[in-house]
Length: 78
Length: 335
Image (cartoon, rainbow over all chains, first blue to last red; front, side, top):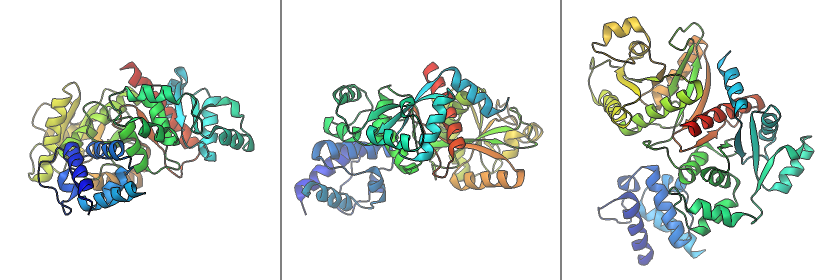
């Protein structure tokens, strides 16, 4: 697993959702937040900082934080 | 004069600029052309200008009646980037904005956010989810609103309410299981939409299976909580509940069931379903048993007017939707 990418994304998720709990690969995105404006904040930060475009629709279909990390990793590696 | 005739007249009296990001679709282009020719709106086709002009010619439409915003040209994009990035709604860096300027739907919304157009009209090609996601991200939500929702207007033969046979309702299409906050947002948005579109003084009833505590439980609590949130956010609006449908719209039943003062009970002109199950079933009941027509659903809750038409909509339905959007945009500017 790309630890650096994981940590970066965890930081972005904390900022976007205002989530203060521990974040693991198995953390449910729905536990971090469900508001669409929070998801927009997260996707915008990912795009701005990593130049990786992940849509809100994609995030809405993901269950865990690990799935998000894998999806962004695909974009970053392209 | 009926609702649609009034709306068409009002739209013509103060033309708005409508961005059409799906001009490649023949029905959309024909509706946009009719909107221009009837004096309802100025149409800005957003996309590959050369392709759109060629399609117009092939369809027998004068391509010069439209304005264009060309996704294939960089001309003017520095200005668009600079103006959009200066807005509080913008969360993207320059590269992200430029990426979106090359896509018709998102370019339309950027043009709308900066005020170059008043309305984005899509939905023939893009899904509702895509329109809502792009609208939230690029145009943003209206102040005091947590969620995008929809509203419609019934025309119910034989119904004699405060607005004759018309009755507003929301949300039957978008927000599946709203929280109390979101239900409050839906009620507030419906009040704003109906005020803008019909000029009614909104009286908005939050519906439940209970009237003023006649039953209890979490479903009822969500509705009363939504009422309190709505009243605290917008004390200027008449939003009340929880009411059963009959107590909301029938003055005699309201008098018996609602044991307190209410500006809404018995004379509501907008009803808010507690969730999408009720909303969908409710609309079907009124349509099937009361043979009602329903206008809409219209998306609401954005900072500006974003319209998502039905994929199966024909030219006249789209034209009506465009006119309704224009009237709503006029009201937004006047607010």
